[in-house]
Length: 89
Image 1 (cartoon, rainbow, N blue to C red):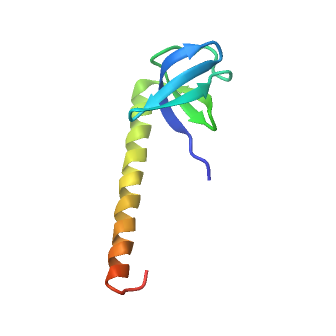
Image 2: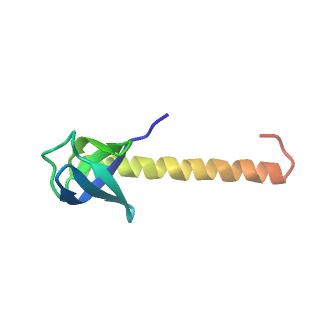
């Protein structure tokens, strides 16, 4: 399964850009979204910006991803706890 992540563009240079999310910066090709500018949010998949998002939509997507990550971490901890107690998964 693949996952596309919303990033905020912090620099644009021709068909190349740098996007940021959670303090992590990534190089991004904007050849499929040539009209973007610094400050825009884009959905990035496999290093390519494939869609422009408005800020509200990007923040909603990032919040959902955060919730999924927290739920996955909680589930992993439950599994580890059961294993330590000698109970099956």
